[in-house]
Length: 302
Image (cartoon, rainbow, N blue to C red; front, side):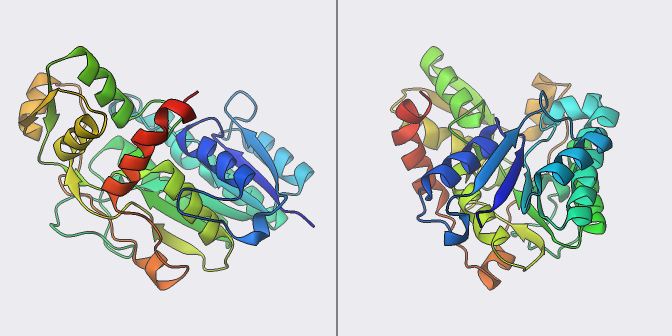
């Protein structure tokens, strides 16, 4: 009997990649587990399902008999969350709790996608899953609340933290840099915030690997290697063949230029320790994943 899967936030960067990988049976990493063959996938976005509405969530999960629910719905605008933390809390914490409760009630597995921003960024080495959290922004606080509420509400819960995500569908840092690189001779990018650029295609693959197991709990899932936003921007310009200089600035200088910007962790690099210990860490080096993305983008974007 084929699996039934619900993907919330199904039209976003990660939701779109999950749908693609499930449809094709493979990602850029390779084949996904056979358990997903012939899976019935229902993808919703806020227009079809408001995850903040507990009654609506319980109704769709009870009616469809899902085996797996993956929550890609979130308020991810870091600066926007700072100015609307109550709204962000509803989407990033209450919504996941609603989904987790419905999964617990009807026997489904639940994947809650989270972020490196749950960490303060004060330690100069990659974080593992059990390290102490301490978000410095509204976005990080609301996503951490979503983790905690999901794990408490559902015994079959996977929390998957990722970082600096880019996909073929939707807006992201890579596409922004490419647009700026076409229009400008120079772009200014922060050079003292370090993390892991991550391909949504790779992340989709590993989420499906994880969700095929019963090894519940918190996972880190990013592409391998640590760099700054400026390093990331430089790699985009070079990979896209754009003759645009990347001028490097500090976070303090950026805040002076953009006073409404939220505080971000200085060092939020993650280590995929739980992946290593369970299904195996298949995430590619970030430069390798980015190179394939840039090669495929013209076709994949439509």
